[in-house]
Image (cartoon, rainbow, N blue to C red; front, side):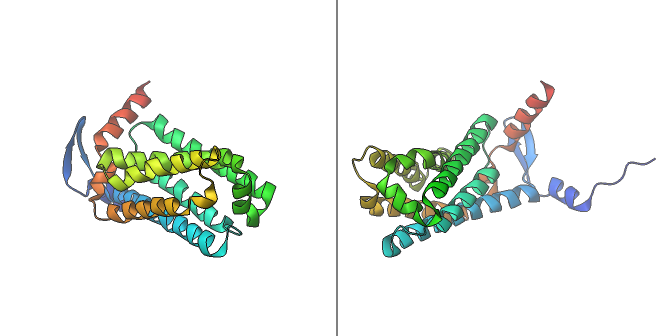
Length: 222
């Protein structure tokens, strides 16, 4: 019996794109790879927009009912961490775990304070920052990855500002209610980073695909 021919879409995904020389051999950027990069970039853009929306409501409408914005931020970052390309699988899994812990902390906050009072509770009880902190640690990891790979200064701003501001609020040096301009700066930097990524070749986000392929090969032969 003859072997069935590959699905045309799968064959197209495997064979399109120029041949690249990597550290461990040649590889192609397929149509599937490009879709993953697009999904990642849209997720980061959605994260930036959701964070700006959260800050705008906080500034003009108060901290009540910022919960929906927090949900949008959590979903967007989760999707970005799903599609992000990181060579080291343990590091990728660690960022996902931090995201999951932060989301769990947010759920606990919503349960304790009520969805409409999450922001007010954070203002009144800064210790809740420890519960949602892992989410921002994951965001910091995303920003550091972007800076490490592309040397984008706005990515370094995201990497430094988020943990610094939360630490200052946690130790009550600069409370959250006085940090608005700095969080706005962080969100704008995140937006600049997200928009700028759409000008890059998809291959830049994927990196040396032969490294992924070699690491996967080593895992399968263990």
